[in-house]
Image (cartoon, rainbow, N blue to C red; front, side, top):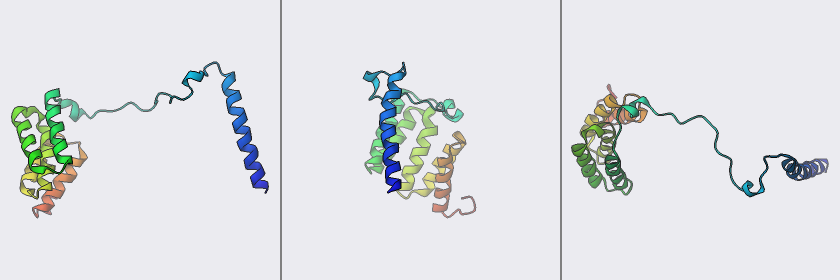
Length: 147
């Protein structure tokens, strides 16, 4: 019974004091009451590896098409799209090899995925997912020592 009274008193105090406190503040603006304040947190960081390998908007579109194929489960089409992207823009190799290696793993072509991830790791050495996938593809071909 006492806990219920204290809970009711605290909730009543909060309901009454918050609007009163807000009215006393000059910054309170009723038209903005329903909006969220801007996010204030640490700035987004970008890897130096990503800055070393910029891609054009055309290449980004080609990679997006390949990702769409990947998400829909059409791995052969994704592989062809990624190979075409690599042929048209060799500077995108850092990103294409990572995606291509993953697609080769999805289609059980582990030897090809090892080659792709080896290149991806050399181009983006700080990208942890490439290292993980490289190890998995090495295990897939039976090279447990390197994996």
